[in-house]
Length: 147
Image (cartoon, rainbow, N blue to C red):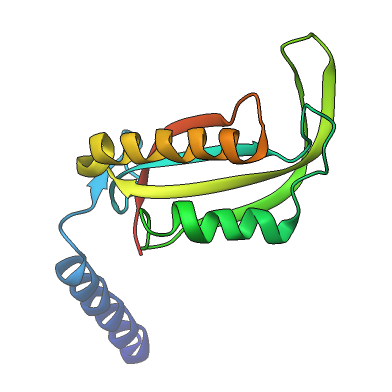
């Protein structure tokens, strides 16, 4: 057998053992054997419209980011994501409304879900009141998060 090939195999085996020993033990394994990384978190997406039902001026980027700074950041200082987009929904009168919108994404540990739920509902009500909105959409999902 070639000495070079034997050394290569030995090196690969040693690297494999080091990786196996050094890998974090907190990682679980999915049903198919794929490593499941991270800790259990909740991912909440809030969907904010910008058109006002009373026909007033649409919420501007500056107004929305000011709202985030004042109403969201104090309760979720560890981080968040804001995406802009176009959305549509059927309002209470049955009309389909198309508008510029924002998606605010929050991640928080499952153990903080009860406290975070109250804060998120306060954020939704504050936006509805401040900008005359009929509602703010909310989507919650479980996630595994690793920073």
